[in-house]
Image (cartoon, rainbow, N blue to C red; front, side, top):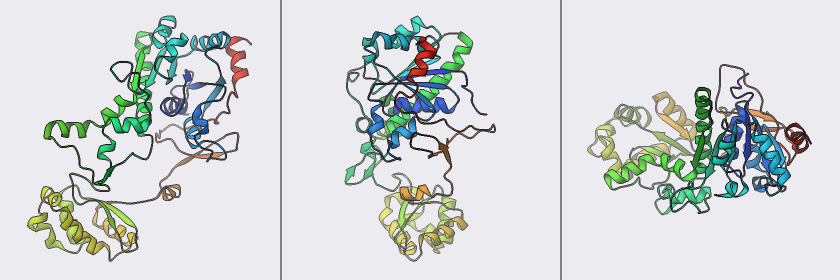
Length: 375
C-alpha cells in the first residue's frame, strides 16, 4: 500500500483550513495524525451542517485523524502535549500569532527540547514585518495580494470562490514537511518551517506581478476570457448553454476558422491575422464566433471542436461536477455513516489504501491519554 509516512507521528494543534489541509494530506500518505482540539472542537466543525449534519469543510480536511480534547491552559493537558511531542516527528500549528509561545510550546523552544522534531507554523502574514499581528483570513489575503483585483468582470473585482490562500499555504506546508523529513534522514535534526498565506499567494501571483513591474500593466479583469489570448473564453451556444474555447497558436486559429466556423478566409483578415490583433479587435472577433456558435447546441459544438482538435471545455455548474464522468471518489467513514469524498489527486503504481474515518470531537482522548501519559 502507498504509505510513505507510515510510522511517522504528526501532532496538529490546528483549526479552520490551512493546517488541517496539510495534516490531512500527511494522513493520506500514511502518517498517524493526532489532532488537538478545544472542548468545543475545531470551529470548522460548525461552518455548516451540509454533509449528513457535518461540516463540508471539516469532512474534507479531517479524514484519517485522531481527535484529542486539550486545554493548553491546564498543566495536566500540557503534560500530555509534551508526552506526544517527545515521540512526534512533526508538530503543526496555526493558532493566532504568539499563542503557542505564550503557552510555552513555541516552535523554537520545542526544537531545543526535542531536537528531531520538525515544526511547521502556519500564519497569515508570517512572524516578521508590519502585518505580523494582523488577523488574516482567506478572503482578506486574496484582496491584499491583488488577486481579487485581477479576478471578476470589468465592472468589479471578485473573490475566487474557494479558500485558495488556505489551500496554497497547506500545500506548501506539505512540501516543506516532506523536504524536512528527507533532510532529517541526513542530518538527524529537525527543522523549523514557517509558511504564511500571504507568501503562498504572493508566489502564485508572480506572473501578474512581473507584468505590472515590467510593463506597467497588470492583467485586465475581463471575466471568462483571457487577457492576452484570443479567442480564449466562454461563448454562448444555441441552446442557452456556454462552451469555453482556447486557441494557443496560429495553426489552431487557421484550423478553427476552417473546420469549426466554416470561414477559412477569416484567418487571414487583417484584423485577425495574429494574436495581438485579435486581442485588440476582440469585440469584432467575438461577433464572428457568436454568429456561428448560436446555430449549434453545446453538444454539437463540442463534437465539432473535438473533431478539429481545438481545446474546449463546458462551462459547468457544481452540480455537473457531481456527475462528471472524470470525477474519482473514495469512501470514508464518519459518525453519520459512510461519505463519498473526492479521491486523492495523487495516483501511484502501488495499491492505495482507503482513508480512515473522520473523528468525532475527542473520540480518541482517553485512548491517547492511556498510551502517552499512562492515564
